[in-house]
Image 1 (cartoon, rainbow, N blue to C red):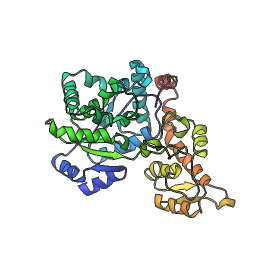
Image 2: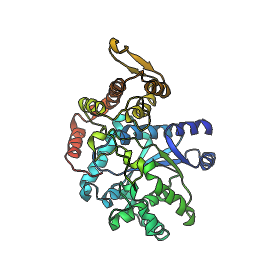
Image 3: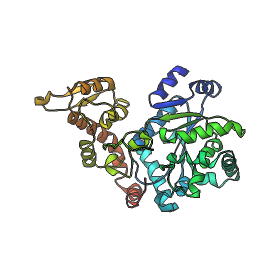
Image 4: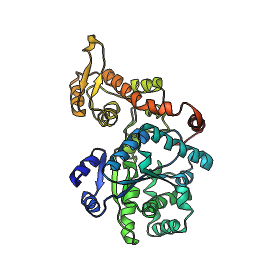
Length: 356
């Protein structure tokens, strides 16, 4: 596969690549560049963290990248997730890995790295401290959104360490491509700024789209990054489809989702069709009674959007079609957690409180 073809694969999910020129040079010099994504084990996992992440990682594996997934347990601790209880955090991490295994991530080709392994090494903390010394407190606080926080919050000293740790993760694991969500952009920019100054290197950053939540959002708030405000959130359960939601839960949440007629912008139902149907299936078949026009099939996102914009496709039709495909994708995950140790793991996670 030549670089143009690889770039097309990346652009199918990347909202930003910093930079394409650097990426081209990287693929020229390395047969298998090392990419990574990381996550805080913090409770239930929704489809943006599950299905989307698995799909994005598989795409990068298919173009020849090696991939590391950081199970950021100590990052979750510093961010006070699950009350800072490391046993709960570790259980949540194990659960999330099992979710990816069930939903199609090629786990045999992915290296899972636990934050606990990094923080036990002196060399890791040397990198953390060097990044901290080379950055102002104000610069670090600007990265607060990577933790789901606001700059205006009264951050703990531990949370101030967090961005320095996340930037150090990249250099300590030897990452060439930091492939994270747009909400993590500021810390990737920090790594790109300090890397060359500290004698490390400048990693390529690929930022994927943040999936919108299902509920209607008041966008009149000030001082808040709108993309962060709109994203799917575990703290608002009906804004998210969780990976182990029942068929009934999926149908109920999608039926109640924000989906204004003839409107594409900020419409989560239309957006989900792009990322969960057309990114996986060759077409989208919507079944409906003959009195409402009978079954209809779309072969591209553009075709679906045009029909919806013209009003020839009703919101309820799209919702019913989306629910059917989501349930089809989630069924292997439901089955995976129906018995044995995986069932016990899910029950454990479901019984824990978690924060945003």
